[in-house]
Amino acid sequence: MPLTPLDIHNKEFTRGFRGYNEDEVNDFLDQVIKDYELVIREKRHLEETVEKLEEKLSYFKNIEETLNKSILVAQETGEEVKRSATKEARLIVKEAEKNADRIINESLAKSRKVAMEIEELKKQSSVYRTRFRMLIEAQLEMLKNEDWDALQPADTTEEYELEMK
Image (cartoon, rainbow, N blue to C red; front, side):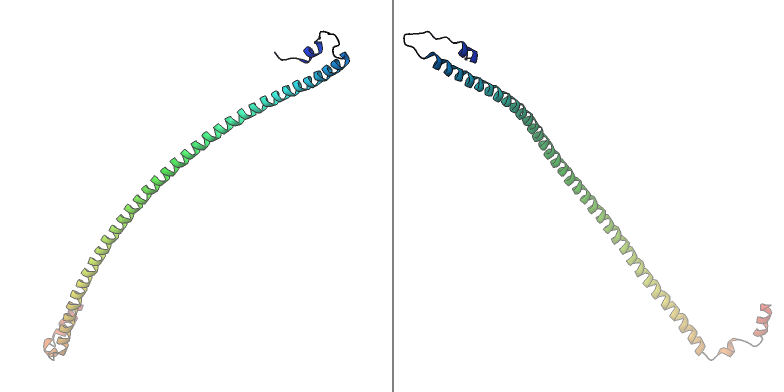
């Protein structure tokens, strides 16, 4: 067990023949007591400081562990969000491609239908023009004919007027 300042103060030395000077020994022991008390106080103070610092260190280690765990969770969450976003983006692209293909196919079908309708209208137009040309040519041929007077008798005009009434 370590010495205390009181142990040093109460220490009695046996006296021998021509021993040490008692006043010098007592002065020295007093100085040792003072220094020893100072060392003990400093030791207590340092022990308290070490205890406080160990508590703080423990607190900060807990914070560090919590932060590390939080960082890991955040990284994992970030990776999961990234994977989900990539997957969703792929699905959106696939859906857009399907829609684009559908729109293109519908447009092509409509385009073909319109082209067929145009061709049909061209054919009908050609037929109508040919018929109209034939009709006009027939009418011109009739106008060129000099037998107009022979076609309509004079008394027909009276019958026409009677019909109109």
